[in-house]
Amino acid sequence: MSNASIYDTPEYESLRDQIGRFIAKEVEPHAAAWEETGCVPREVLRRMGQAGLFGLMYEEKYGGADSDAMTNLVFAEALSQSTFAGFIITVLVHTDMASPHLHHAGNAAQKDKYMKKVIAGELITAVGITEPGAGSDVAGIRSTAKREGDDWVLNGTKMFITNGVHADLYFVAAKTGPGKRDISMFIVEKGTPGFTVGRALKKTGWLSSDTAELIFDNVRIPAWNLLGEEGKGFYSVMKNFQTERIALGAMAVGHCQQAIKLTLDYVRQRQAFGGPLWDQQVIRQRLSMLDAKTRAARAFMYHCAWRVTQGHDIVQDVSMLKALTGELVNEVVQTCQQFHGGMGYIRETAIERLWRDARVLAIGGGATEVMLEEVAKRY
Image 1: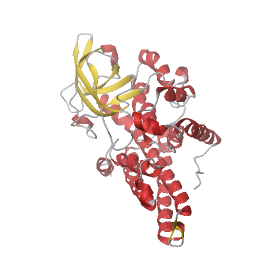
Image 2: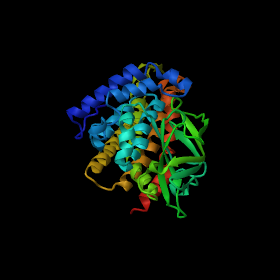
Image 3: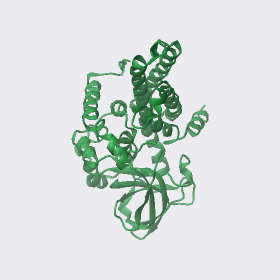
């Protein structure tokens, strides 16, 4: 399976090689232990930061590379060649889902305080939007922030927060007015009085990613911690979904690529009915079609990133991409698992892990059904 496309450049290939070497050395040999402990070691994340991988789209003055959405997609797709999705999502939440809020909406003083450490991997970030009663329906959040003199006071609970246990810096959405969309974003540091990690959540997949409930009980923060304009947080969240959903699409495509690769290797070696499984026409043809769908989805994904670099509003396209890849990855990985037979159901095999990890990609970051409604209402 060739990765060559009209979007490739020597710089992109160099970035892919750099990330591929990092994964081969720092992740794949060690990440099974991270699945047991439930998090990626902070020193691994710091090494990624030191290698310049946490600030590709951010300003050079803070240690970033001032790159564009295409470069960022190359990063996300290369990262997603790891077979440990818990590691992938730990990184992508930091780079593509949480810290962009600081990049887009932070003022000079806020960026001066935090951005260098975020890019260096010294501060790991999380974003607090989802609640027990509000996920894809962002306007339905119930956490509140009320102004009291020179402070804001936050109350509420967040749920399913990736990096929630071990993050240092949280970007939190709360209602600041009576309207459904009167939402503002706030910077909350770990250790702020009244802010606690309620519990670490046990999941089916993404086992090396820490996921938590966050509790805000009269959390008093300075007015300075308001991120962007008061009441504009809903639109900030919506804007960042474009970056987030391309990253999740890259994750899905990476899983598809790895599952097909693992399965091609397996069926060429596995002997059954007098020869390798590859001799069975149904298996050859099914894998060929899954590869065709994966390549088509990948081309669409790169087209979406290219359109972002051209300044287009591509909410419909990105919603299509998220829905398409979230469903496709489950089709691909389950079929590939099926072709592994009993071995596909054994823990510690890469295909079994991919099967568990893929399931959430049709749920998190915008469920398939919600994405398709976003598509439909733009016709």
